[in-house]
Image (cartoon, rainbow, N blue to C red; front, side, top):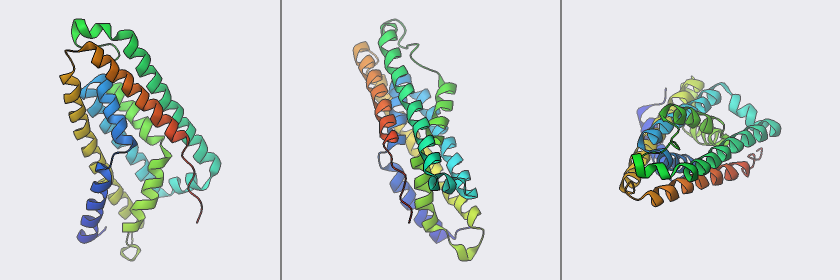
Length: 217
């Protein structure tokens, strides 16, 4: 187990990185603007579970194997990119098709529901090789080999990072939900927000597709 000083230093560094705008924050914000606060929060916990997939994989060395293989890295990257782009296009199409229902009920069938948002959040994060790169590049800097149980230290520190990221994502979902609530009386604005969120997801997918495999040392 890492000592308290090391854990505090890591937590401070991880929190700073968690509040730095990145793909996870933008995805949660986009999902919230598209489907509402509950979907945003659900997707936050989904991305948290997806992050834990990378923590567990890193702890047992699977992520290192993926990053060492150009074929595996590229396959994972493209799969995640295609999935994210597909979600974005689906969001755009649903927003355009269903926006008229907002006037009648204040909600739209463009909403996919919290359960689906949760599952999609897991897949989006689990299929993101940039998350694996982050954990394998950042977490080991705070692991103390002399204390032993290196894999356990990795799991503890990785879990702290995921918890902080999830907390920030939930706060982002709450903030984005307030923005969406403020626009509830303006159906045209709701539609633009949903289309914009879909475009953001497509952009994230394209960005993921362009990620290069880290060069070997």
